[in-house]
Length: 212
View 1 (cartoon, helix red, strand yellow):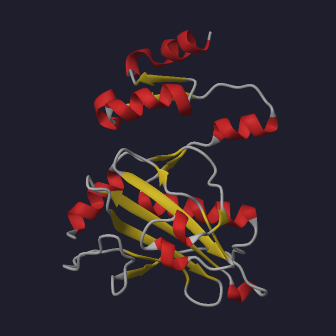
View 2 (cartoon, rainbow, N blue to C red):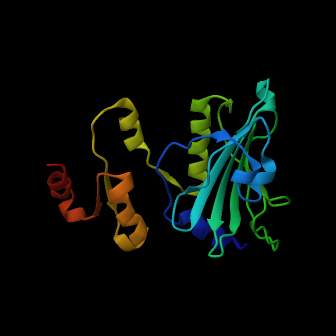
View 3 (cartoon, one colour):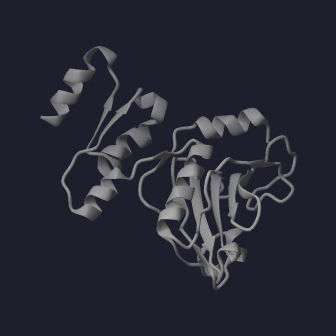
């Protein structure tokens, strides 16, 4: 895949709208290539849509010692035929390398429904050690993954629900065309209380009008 193609996927509008939920992996419940990764100590999320053409999947592997544990994040391009094309693999191993990722950049290999063996690898900066078994540390790794893949995190609404607090989430988009008609309309039903188009001249009155 050419570098400009990967960049276009990173720049595409993508949103993670809820805290990922992990569960014990079962080979029959996950598509290739992830079905082959099911192990007793491995937990994973379902495929989580982040756009009309992209989804993510996270998994972590437990162990008796910190150095035996690991965390993985996958950004996938969902092809029209239902195939999954990997765009980025995010790895965290406390025992070696720390945070790093793989991308199919400048390769001619067809990675459809595969992981990324032999793909170029890039180290990512991190200032601390994470424990994949700890929920807060997994959340921090998911934030790093989203930064690397250009995914916006919008889970404030779920935080309010869990804390039983009232509140409103107002989403302001550059235009309906910029984010995609389906994403713009879907946000009103699932993600936010109100979605509006940005207007620099009338921003203050715009916010006031929808909040009161």
